[in-house]
Length: 100
Image (cartoon, rainbow, N blue to C red; front, side):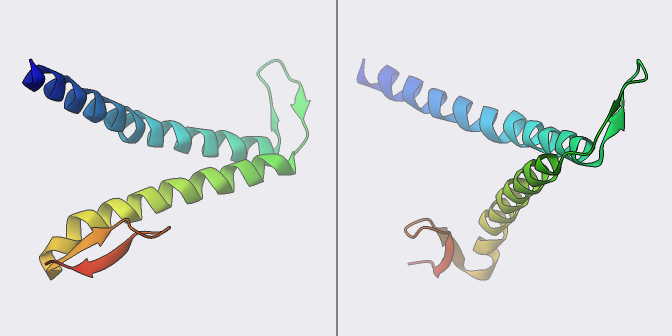
């Protein structure tokens, strides 16, 4: 029975990470694109003109920074073993350390 609990625990973790990285990052990127549209102003389909909103540019910048950081960390995790290193998350930010 203990093996079933461990199995479902692992499946749950994989599902959550898959949703965050698989659907969360593209959704966050879409929020960034929408922020750019809000920041630059636009005209709606009914002809109503929306003024530019600087908050949209801030939202877009934050969203794009988070996406870029996630991609860079993912590339670090993939490439690090080729250099005989691994990514350590012991600090506030991920660092490359030698494999032991």
